[in-house]
Image (cartoon, rainbow, N blue to C red; front, side):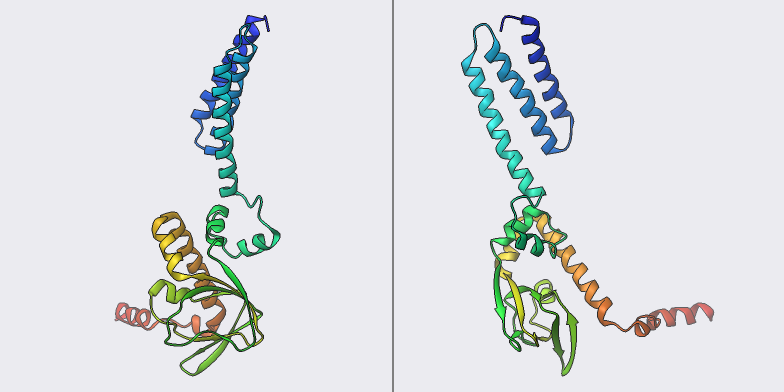
Length: 236
């Protein structure tokens, strides 16, 4: 191309795109803008009266590197590329990013459990954190039994405390169990504070849901003993 003004305008446009990229905080937008700027630079060197092939190649290589990082960011932030089954499973790990879920997915194993098979035994160690897909999950603790509705996590208290299972857990009608081995899961959480925070938040939501479903409303509305005592002291 012989028009020096147009060639210079391409170079200036590349500079503007790169400047704008470094001015934003979102990494995905930053890389897209920088790639656009690098593309303008490559075009500038390719359209010169005497093309500079080395610079065109260098900018093309930098564009390819940024494209790879854009793909990584998309897998971290979106469910792009997940199967329909993985998307349904991910819906139960709502505090995790898609990327965190993908990494945990390498540890997961699914199995079909027949009716009556115990998932946990009271007072015994629990090896796996389990996500149980069944309409009815039977919890038996100190001789008292009560059901909870699935899908639900099993073993999260043992995971958080490191103690043996506080109850016997069975599936009266059988179901599907997704298992996460506790040892590797704890190791991954120890290496990633963000994953650890996301999992603890997930357990908190799950425990709150179970408490809300299991505690009778009339009992939950009763004042606590400490609160009654404090009120009596204030009145006195």
